[in-house]
Length: 200
Image 1 (cartoon, one colour):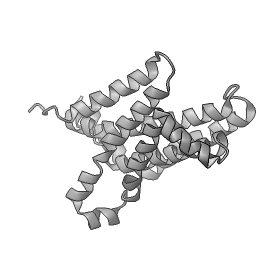
Image 2: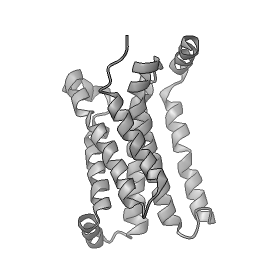
Image 3: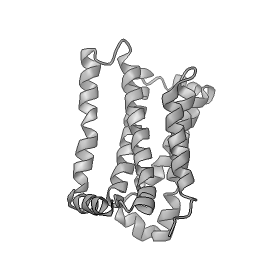
Image 4: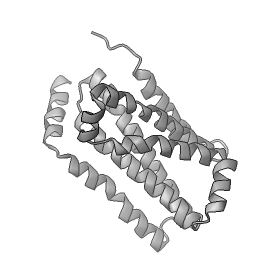
């Protein structure tokens, strides 16, 4: 097992982070193509909004996996964590843009009313606001300015953002739906692993 992990770590070191950006941006033109050609069903705008939001949450969860994987298996994907976080933010922005421009047609009054009246939208917006300072400071200059300890402390807000994302998805789902429950269970399990001491 150790040999496999070492081989993966060696391979991962050779993969530039821009490859991750390109691979994870590929779903965007594909989803737009599906939306234009009827591939997203009878409500393409809603479907596009949901697909983008789901990818954002998946990226946040994958980013959350990096530390436990390193601690408990030795698999080191740390170099990709910043890219995963920024990609998650990009998908959240796209998800929000589809809601603002295509779903709500820039009706700002209606949007504000929905943010206050619909709890799942309130929680989703809170998650977006939590992610903002993390996206802005995801660069080496911010690490130097804040100091490594301060930067790490700030970026623990990722935990809050991913929980808010999970709640947003749970609340959005109508009735009992297994998928958002599984997402939330994975999020809570990954957060719980952070307080589990590593065996020596």
